[in-house]
Image 1: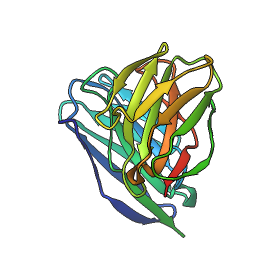
Image 2: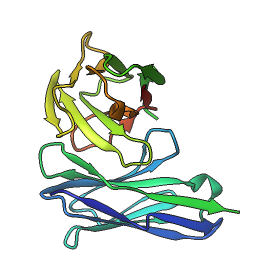
Image 3: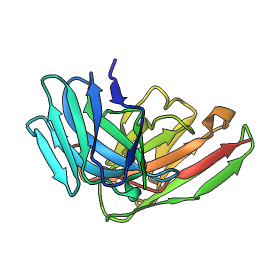
Length: 112
Length: 113
């Protein structure tokens, strides 16, 4: 069964600090992996998308990594800001044409 | 950022009634998706739609649900005979291809009483 597991479930960090969120998946065959940011009550917003051949991709203060061998990805947030408070969702496409599997998300809270 | 608009933003309905949720993609992307997110739970894939046909659907997308693009622009999700457990946020998304990033709409909050 295709699964996407994220850790931690929730995280509280001080403004200005860095943090790393983890994503493990069992989706096969693999097509791509995306990280989304979702504010409460809003639609997810894409941060990065990576295919099999990409190891690292950055988008401003967000850097995603992908290890397709171990089926793990991480999202690193640098110099966190209060506006980074949101849920971060790992989404893997694969295991069937256009089939997408969402992770349960990591709820990040940045405090002053 | 490319936009997807959804209407209504909030729909309240009685159990057993039919609802139609609408999605209006701004550009001419060909791939459309519907997702559901029950309060406090993860986003769940419902269906993908390409070239006016369903290309993939999940186990959730049973006979109660249907999608269509009636006028070549709006993309609709119809839920027949709604149940209490259909209460959720419903998100529409679009992409230029099945491998590109998907742009999500703001969602429709459906409340079934």
